[in-house]
Image 1: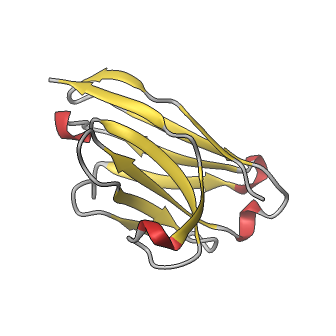
Image 2: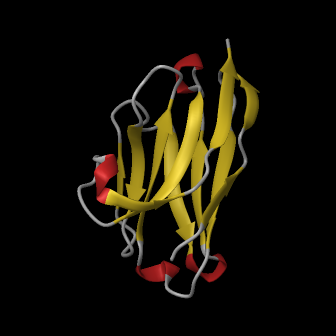
Length: 121
């Protein structure tokens, strides 16, 4: 059983920045591939970014160059640094453990409860 807890969401002006955190339970976080998804009202959950246990990173085209995923294995924590935020980045952001396909939410088995990010224009 893996428990994930996101934090760091909030209200920010367009062009601003936020950093999301996701703390994982357990002793083997360093072996997990992890990812971030988001879901806006009325839309499907969509892939944002992922990081392998080896440190390799992957991004959705919509956030490439603005968002940066990282991890601190000593703190069992996953991060998402979000810069140059846009109104369309408004969504609930979820962290999850990846066991399958990169951009498919079915490829992730454990999920956090989500944190709301609201970008005002």
